Amino acid sequence: MGLLDQCQELFKTASLYEVLGITKEATEAEIRRSYYKLSLKVHPDRAPDDPKATEKFQVLGKLYAVLSDKEQRAVYDEQGIVDEESDCLSQDHCWEDYWRLLFPRITKQDILDFEKQYKGSDEERKDLLRLYVEHQGDMDVILTCVLCGSQEDEPRLADIIWAAIKNGDVEEFPAFTQESNKKKRARKKRADRERKEAEEMQKEMGLDQEEDSLMTMIKKRNTSREQDFNSFMSNLEAKYSKKGGKSSKRAKK
Image (tube, rainbow, N blue to C red; front, side, top):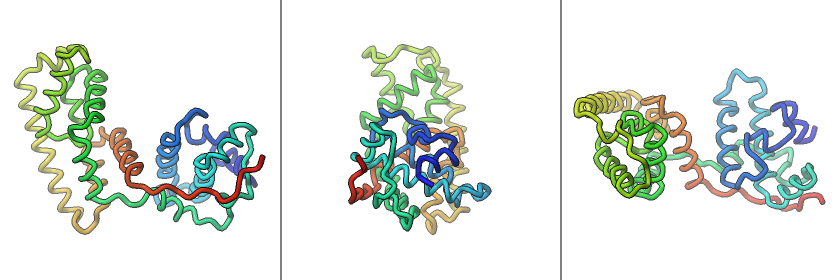
């Protein structure tokens, strides 16, 4: 059975782009992120109740191998076919090793390095102002969603927002400009309690012995951050992952 037929059978569509939930105009980075997120969902270790998890994982590996190769992608875009005999679709290819090569395990130091580069960057400012507008100045929600943010960061983040309001980059929302001291104190008290709970969780999970526990702890600490957490991890994967090798055979014309 060819790749397109496998996609139809397992994902109910023969379109490689539709499987990943993206369009034909998607960039290489968007393809990579979509592949990473979907492959995580169907990974046999994460979907033990799905009898076809292994098959789905392997098919996604093949799909990404095609779309990440410029020549094969061009042929697929133009003719709607893939080269089933190419090296990247080899039957003896270990797709688990391929996936791990693309997305090596993220360490605690990787996360700390990312945080150091992210804080104070243009990317952080852009994300912060997006959240400010999206949540109409509600700092309770903004501080919950902002990446790498903590209670200690609030004064610095508030200064960024105030400066943006002054410059006319964002509109003035009363929820932010007229926030009461009572609400600020309640937020600080809540943050202190969450920090204490996180520290206790860290000890219980033996973080020093298992670096993966850091990511579990971050996600478990605040489930409302899940979407931004996934974005955060995707950024890390893109930053620290190695690029996969190209197929040695040209796609069929």
